[in-house]
Length: 181
Image (tube, rainbow, N blue to C red; front, side, top):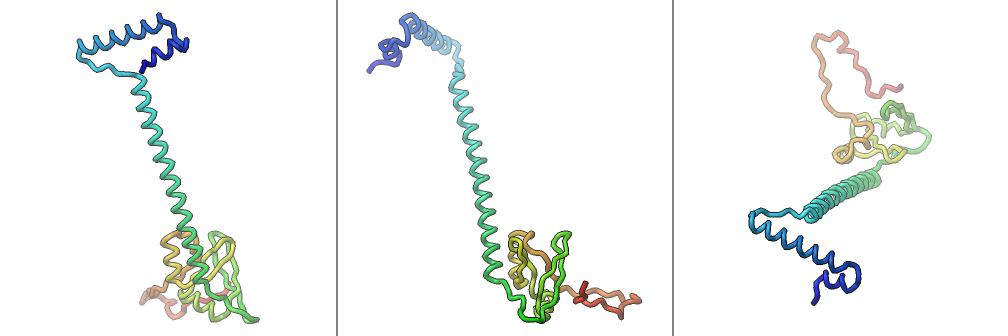
C-alpha cells in the first residue's frame, strides 16, 4: 500500500520538491525531539482536542437544558391531571352566591353554593388555577400541587388556631370568616 504522499504525487496535487521538503522537515523534527528529549506539541492535535472538549461541553449543556424542559413539562402534566381528577363541583341552582378571592393583585369572583363556600372558608377546599379557569380541589390535593408548583394554588385557608390576647379590649368582637366584600 502506498503512502498518502505517493497518492498525492500520482494525483498531481503535490510536486516532488514539496514532498521532499515535507519529508526533510519531518525527519528534522524527529531528530530534534530525540536529541532534546522534549515532546513536540502538535498544534493540530491540541486544537482538535480542544474542539472535542468544547463540543462535549456544549452537548452536555444542551442535554441538561432538554432534560430540565422535559421535567418541567412532566410536572405541569402531573398538576393538570391532579386538578382534573380531583376538581369538586361548585354547586348548582339559583342559590349560588359570589365568593370573592384574590389572584395576585386582581380580585376575582366565583359563584359557589353556600355549603361549598363554607367548605372553602373552613379550609377543606382550595381554589386552584387551571389555565384561565379556577377550580376547587380538596386541600390535601392542593398541598401536593403546591409542592410541585406554587403558582397554581390561589387561595388556601390554613386551619391554624387563632391566638387571642387576654388583655385585648376587642376580644369579644370576632371578625367573621365569611365576611362578604
